[in-house]
Length: 423
Image (cartoon, rainbow, N blue to C red):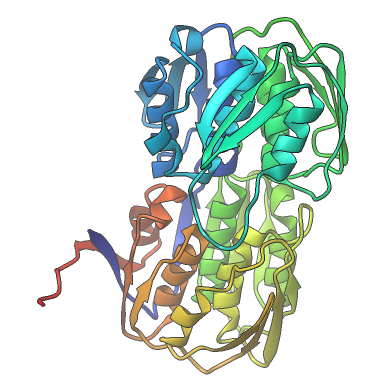
């Protein structure tokens, strides 16, 4: 077991390059199963969730090879069956994308209910609703899902709630369905557009990704492609908040500024200066952090995956900030960790009231999930003294080379072995 040790209080300064989008990559890798030839995927983030996806593909018989650190060659033509390995699937939430991809390719799949971060009830009922609308039969035994169809038929699917996972999963299942599929009340996040673009590069006919309605004309076969994944919106936002939280001056490069607009707007409201360039944003802060009320919403609203990072920054703002979590029902578990550093945060259901304090002090923190883990890193960078962050495996699910990237910005952070406590 390892942990991060951070000596805080140093403003970040310099340039950081953003990796490929985790939320796109964990869907695009399973989507390669729909291809009928080898695919080359570029700008793949070097994170543990990708390692799991790669291992699932390899265990199913696909030929997977790293060409470079961030470029994968995947040949799905050697896949041997439609059973997703149970132990691997339980390690990550995004394993459910193998269901849509395998159903779309082979009309059947057997998979485990997915694992991943635990911050509330995260059912996949909207996914199953979409599969059934396309003509599939769904059976659940314990935590195993069986989905099969004689032939998938295009259908009209209206999602009861806006769901990124369901939008992508049903979109993948529908690309080879007979006829036309119309998906309404869909999610509009940038990584949904990226997955649709990837599928279209294989020969799919998907229109409207990024809007409220996606129309899919089923095709008989898909080919092969070379495709580069978009930059990671959430990684970029995390470094933007870290720069503002530490009173630093950081150029976050290799990004699509349009994807960052809601993050940029709230950082400006909180007292930071943000300058946009063609493929970069510069974040600076000299004056005090200002109070800021935030509500997370589906895209183009403020992303739920940025809520813990922003809340952490606002613990030292002047005045009281109100944070409303509008997507998940239990995403404030990390607040108890912030209190260890002297933060004054009260949570009532899906609302957190943050009364700013003068400063945070160092302490021992636990990473309770991926984005909360990133928030703990920001807290450690902000705090006076030394902080230790445990359970860093959560953080490394979504952040490539986070220690080296922060060290290049002047942070005093290192990874060390945890010393077992004596009984």
